[in-house]
Length: 426
Image 1 (cartoon, rainbow, N blue to C red):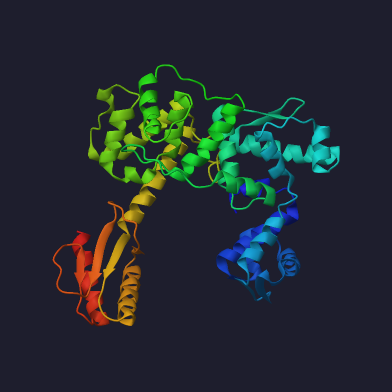
Image 2: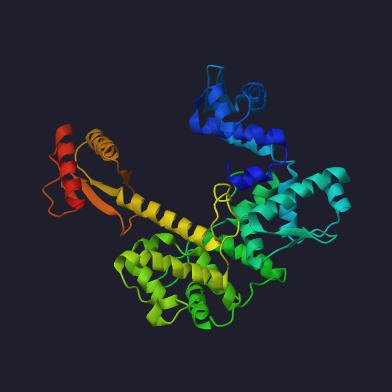
């Protein structure tokens, strides 16, 4: 489970059950000792919980075994998810956050009546939520009517994370989330790629906050960059959002994959940099990525803000938000670049019986995976990916083709692929 989801589960037993099930889903076969080490619950508690979970989840799962090992598998994944989701239906923190970001203003007594709990119980629930909001977002609950208080960007980040990043929701909130994530926009935005799904999601957050009378502050002195960023959005869709909102929306929804190409990084800096053009020039090729991320951080500072919530792994590290954000951006970039470098987009242009064609495909997939590459086949291409066509037709010239005999041996396939890989990796 994600950190925020874990923090929002108030009932101790529910959190424990979901934690155990998450481990079983991930590993399928585990001993009680391994579960105890992973979850930090006692083996006795785990054994007791598993007995109850078998009864609760009924025939939706197969969970067999004992102290020497448990094996988990699905019998009906749909029924299982419904039962799993039902565990959250009475979780108060989900209801509280949903209503607070909707602008609901209630006293402690009114909230207690709404949640069907005592005033003392609501006070404990509220203290828990206050702790979560402060730790992750620097957002507070203030006034007699329990209203959210914090920077506008922090409240928006809370809304986005709550509605669009959790793996599981209570049933009523899931219905709302599903409606918010309908049909991503298919609009084009000139030469810059925006993530359509994130654009719809962040667009909802922006619209909701503006409707409630809350807008991002205007930073003076950045009008030129702001207008250029706003124009990117205007090229794809028409909205009545203020320019500073459009600029932030573009920064929040840029498709990161386009910046795996260093030339796109340079182009982006030249077009949108907050600094004079002579300072925006990139001196050395090896410093391009650093410089690009520094510019992105400057733009986020100007038009939104850096993410303010931290995961548990960061809380013990004495680093500024800028350093944390920079390191995270660099980590994602390196991981994406490595994935691209270790991925092959494979197309098959084969002849012969279906059985023969399927056999050749299996041999190719097996060898590519054993060689440490991620094999992609389908209709989606990327200019960044290494692409190869596997064919057993007449000889095809070109560096992106691997030519096989009409009925190849396994050894021939392996040697042909090995030769091609050694060529393109140079």
